[in-house]
Length: 199
Image 1 (cartoon, rainbow, N blue to C red):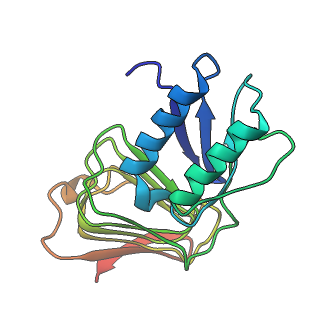
Image 2 (image 1 turned 180 degrees about the horizontal axis):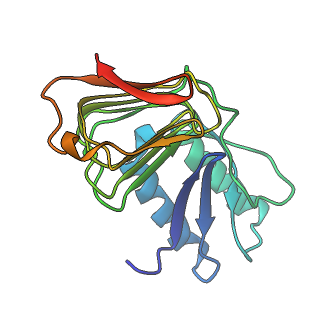
């Protein structure tokens, strides 16, 4: 749907949920429920705020959203004007587990480590404050240590990224790696250079 009533955006600071200001609250609530239902593992455990654009939420509406987030294991932050939604500070012990393939055009951003039980297709993006582990083939863009953690690593069963970033260092795989080896590899920073080694 082009004009999505609920937009969920990920940044290196966290997650932002934007609610359309032109729809009835009940329709928004239903759309938000469907999004969270389809992404339950993504948001569980997050301390969050919402962005309601030009909409002024009543106390009753705010309480309904609070219950909805609680049902999905999320904590809605109290705010005099709920305009932004952020996760806590980065923590590598926080792990986002996704049991799916990340398709072209999809972007995953998380303030912790990301584990994907599937592939990351060309055109996909994975951004993590911690490590990135792909239990399949990584063909998209991967950015580990997005908040500056130079100890972060990127690991995949087949490491064939279009672009690789760790902290502030960017690397593109050489052309001869187009097919890549048939064994797991790990990418890490050594002397401010991204080095790829067998796992």
